Length: 304
Image (cartoon, rainbow, N blue to C red; front, side):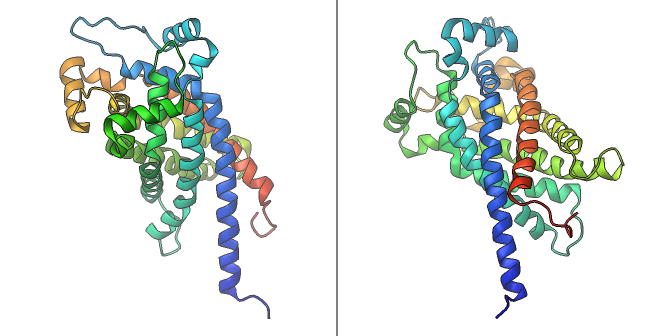
C-alpha cells in the first residue's frame, strides 16, 4: 500500500529532526573549539573582584589573554575545552531540535511567525536544554577560572563539587543560567531566524546565500551579547563558588552584592570578549549549520 499522508508527514518530520540534530552537533563543535580562548578570558574577567581598593589582576580582554598565555601557555588559554564541547554538543542540538516545534506550537494557524514568537520559541528551547545540561557548565566554569599550577581535570572538579555540595552542586547557578540562556537563545535563534527574512525581504541578499547567513548571524550575536551579559556575570560567580566557601546565597543575593560593592558597571564585566565571542560563534555556528544541513538534505525543486 502507498504510504498515507500522515506516514509521509511523520517520515519528513523525523528526517528534518535528524538533519537539524546532525547539523547543530557539527556546527556547535566547530564554533566552540574556535571560541574557547575568548570564553576563558570572559570567565576570568567576570570572577575577578574590583572596587573598594581591590586591585584588578587584568586590565582588560587583551591583557587577560596575554597574561594567561604567558603564565599558563596554550593549555591555559584552552582550559575547559572538554566540558565546553560536552556542553555545546549536547545542549545546542537539543535547543535546535526544540526550536521549530515550539515556534509552530506558538503560531498554530500556519501564518508566518513574528519576531516575538521567534524570540519566545528560541528562549524556551534554550532554557529547557540548559536546565538539563547545567552540570557541564559548572565543570567548564571552574576549569576555566582555575589558576592552579597543576592542570585540573574534569574528574577532579566533579569530585570536589560532589564532596562539598552533593548532587545539587552540579546545578549551582541554574536559575541565572536558565535566565541567561533564555535571553541568549531568544536573541540568537529568534533574531537569526527573523533577520534572515528581514534581509531577504529588503532585497539585500538572496535566499540561502552565504551573505544572508553571515549577516543574520552577526545581528544575532550583537543582540545576544547586549541582552545576556548581566545574567552571565551572576551565573559565572555562582558557578565558580560551587565546591568552595559560598560568598553568595543565590542569584538575587549575588546581584545585590555586585551592585553594592562593585557598581552597576560590574554587570558588564567581560562584555568585550562576550561580544567578540558571540560575533565569531554565531557566524561560525549558523553558517556551518546551514551548510551541513544543505549537504545532508539538499533542497528539492519544490523547496526552492
